[in-house]
Length: 262
Ligand SMILES: Cc1cc2nc3c(=O)[nH]c(=O)nc-3n(C[C@H](O)[C@H](O)[C@H](O)COP(=O)(O)OP(=O)(O)OC[C@H]3O[C@@H](n4cnc5c(N)ncnc54)[C@H](O)[C@@H]3O)c2cc1C
Image (tube, rainbow, N blue to C red; front, side, top):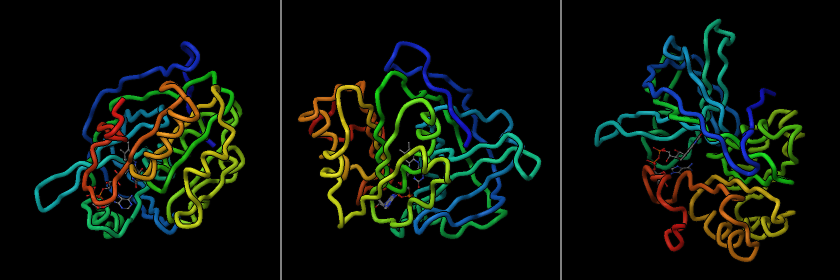
């Protein structure tokens, strides 16, 4: 299990590292089914020289063709190997093939080895904060690559509990043995579990850090409870809508909860 550095500055703050922003032209070397919804694309190319990504939430902008011209979608560098089996650098991106019309998912449904992809970034890395007693991670399939990066950052440092939500019953398959051991994961399938109830049952105190990524509407009640009843300040929370039902190309910089933009 590769690891990621955590912040060394003030406890509970997050160091940021900026990267040179580059657009890279990459080629699909292999396509691998990971879970019912996730497909991994291993990308290769000389342009990967100098690729750097240290933060659990790092993301690249991938460019796709659409009826309206090129569009960009965010993806998490799931794994980067400076020297992979191909004897060169390799980047894994894990795509949810979600079955709804979308430029990225259309590409991921069809793409085979030899296909090309334009990838920009990451612009920078925000490192995992140190100094919390425990960490709760919540992710649906779209957040799984980032969740694995959080688990690897905290392994052996801070106890982590991962809640995998959404409708993919095979998400656990996305964690390798060491990650599963470190993440003490629990699966909360939509329709069988209420995500908010699952979150309320967690060991959450003023010393808990909570990260979440997934469908924006699923996370709004969770955010309201964490901020309200649980009383967690902003520094204990990092909650992100990675996609939104019925919205194409969600701007993840927009507030997760429009009724409470702070
Ligand atoms: C920082 C960041 C990192 C991300 N990392 C990843 C990653 O590593 N892997 C990954 O798969 N996704 C990731 N995402 C989410 C991904 O960017 C979105 O799911 C994106 O909308 C997919 O684009 P699309 O062209 O397929 O669909 P869009 O054109 O954006 O949307 C078309 C339709 O598809 C629906 N839709 C979009 N995404 C999903 C989904 N996941 N499940 C079900 N329906 C969906 C929309 O609601 C809409 O109705 C990340 C998002 C962010 C902000």
